[in-house]
Amino acid sequence: MFWQTTRFRIDLARPQVMGIVNVTPDSFSDGGRLTEFSAAIRHCEQLVAEGADMLDIGGESTRPGSTPVSADEELARVLPVLDAALTFGRPVSIDTHKPEVMRAVLARGADIVNDINALQAPGALDAVVGHASCGVCLMHMRGDPATMQQRPQYDDVLREVGGFLEERLRACRARGLADERIVLDPGIGFGKSVEHNLDLLRRQRELLALGRPLLLGWSRKSTLGTITGRDVSQRLVASVAAALAAVQSGARIVRVHDVAATVDALKVWAAAGLARG
Image (cartoon, rainbow, N blue to C red; front, side, top):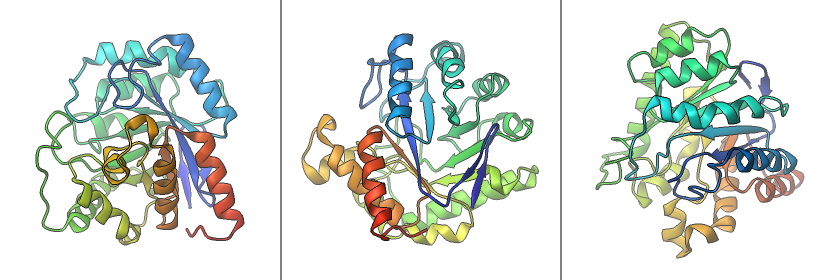
């Protein structure tokens, strides 16, 4: 299975590691650390050196309770880092749900749009369909970042998440977006309780019936803190374990902060013949 993006047709036979680059002052994990351009570029270089297969740059925090920023502010944070990251020989994803940001970053050469809102905003689907070949990640989220963790409820979280992703996949197909440009993300931690997240992991393979690759983002999430009792700065081992479990359950891309540790773990996992597509 492949993921077609602006500059790269990514072979997903081997699980891919997407390195997180948060250029926001209020990210839940590393907020403020990469707001300086030079620090952000050094971080991109480090992730590539550690084995990141692709980079995901975000200019607006989507942590629970986060405050939205304007498109102009988001672009001011993202565009300089994008321009530099495009020279590193890796696919570059932009984590945004704003159509005006999508259009601007795609015009600059971004490979992937990673949208927590699954292209539901007016004009978002137009922005992606209007591009010849960019990749897109459609994610499930219940509510919005400001309110999503206020007692989320589901009758059957897997069925409801799967149904939403199937509907968004149909919407993209109806507009002529080729399947090979699309991956799906069930949205761990986005409008879901600890038990919802764990149920999604236990039953993750059921989502493979949708016929598109899965991207999972467990890295340093609060569910891991609840399970382990560890602060966000101490969740490396739990994050790697969750990434491996996601791959074992069919994920083809894992979005992580700790690239080197995840890459090493996946190499051992693959060498032992344990990872299954």
